Image (cartoon, rainbow, N blue to C red; front, side, top):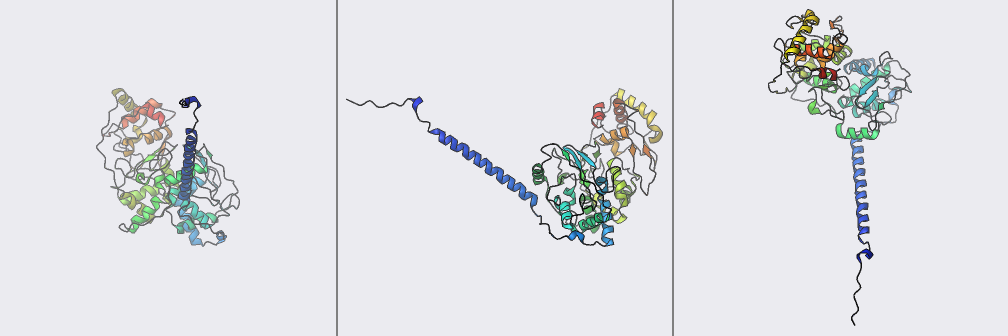
Length: 443
């Protein structure tokens, strides 16, 4: 008789595919580990490319000559180094100033030559690495609140002169305060990724088709002047691209707008006389504009001390920035009620200084008719000036500037919106009205 064929019940079958599934899972994990390792290696390489190992020699003991120290002091003014590394009421260059960022507070470091808390144990090589590569003497990556993204263009000779000057100032014992940053921004790993994405060490290369004056201006504006730190838009990680440099941007946490230096509607000086630019940077005011807010601080602490040759070079560079081509702008008119209310406030509070027709007073009060600050798309600076006052810097060439008092205790948000809307649409001005919400957002 035929032997019946054995039938295998499905529930009793062996689980042969399971090893294959496990094997596929292991391969996927290994692939992920290899990918992460490769990415980590790439990030590490991107953070050290171009760096040279520091010498073990104590070359910080080398004696600097008085000329080099004087040059360093001048360059420190050009970079406004004391503006960040001197806390209000604190010792000169001892650090401790808190810089608010969207990611937390960064505290500036002690740059005095104290051996334990300052630069006393640093070498010129280590200082150059910090300026050029954004890395501390102990190897830590530095946060770009220290604008090494611009300082990387500073020459080695100028870096050495700066270091010689900092070594010559009085030593102050003051420990550096730890940064107060949220996770993951507080980690060196996150900073390394940021640098891999957005930073590459560089150097200033003169453009042969340009004049020596233009190249000197470009070196100062792009490097020590770090103008793009304010006059450039930043992405959600706080980085700005070279394509956006000097095209305007909101200054993080300050609610001031640094206007575009390449737009005739904002702060371009392409059609200015060179001397007008020099006068503005030297005195803080000129027939064409006045420096207020953060720019007033720059003039007060930095540019007023630069020599005319360097100021003329900066003017030459800024005058030749490629200009934006912009479509004609159309603006809405404020509604009748807001216009009427704003006009009444202007007549009561503003006309005595700025004139019934917004004509201002030469050398004292700026004209509002045709004023680019008034007609810029962003009303942020107008709101800041009305709320907190407008004060040009006191300089050697303009020791007693006229100022505007703050109105935050006099006018509410709706009244500020009304008077600004009136000013932005009166006397030939063409700009959109301001809402109370915009006033609140820019406070």
